[in-house]
Length: 289
Image 1 (cartoon, rainbow, N blue to C red):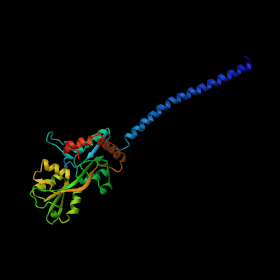
Image 2: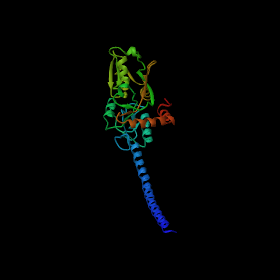
Image 3: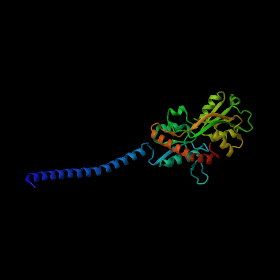
Image 4: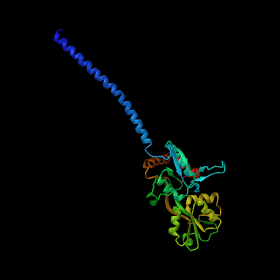
């Protein structure tokens, strides 16, 4: 081989060696890049799963007024401690489970403090308990998609002579309602001549009605029917007493936590699709609502 050709070949081999070294170096960098990408993806995934905020990590914290059976109530008979139960308690636990969270239930509060508490934040993430979606409440907080349809009802004693809104709408008649509810709003609008008595919970309303302290009560129809069946056999929803208000219940969430509302909506949709909501309704109401 001629000297010039040998020099040429030598130069080519050197160039090839440099190129190969650069290629290997690039490959080495390439092998670390996917690892960084995977870590970034894991971080992004973690951020995505935690993009909503929670009062307590790993827990979906709920407040409610627990004197609203069968949606929310307390059973102290067996343990001597507060045992929360009801349709909405089961819904909360199922939603929390589907979000990979633990259901955390706080002690009972007054109903009319729920919206301000969720709006302020820092104490609870959500509220359930037969809470009607209204335009007024939507100014302060967000609701999940509706998951129960409901109406209001007039409740009176079985021997009552005044059983309609027209008959009750007279001076001297006292109508018991739970403070801050749509039942109170309906009673004030439709019975302006009667005295509307706002109380802490529906049990106080029905007990006062049963003892003769009040002449009627206005409350959610499913609650009235449930309580009459299990505890207040002397009361009734009279013929025409069911008020077709066309209400829908939703889960209360802060406006500052839209990602949580979205996650809850997905859980509710899945529960509707796979029949879980029907199962919970049947457990508490005897059949799907």
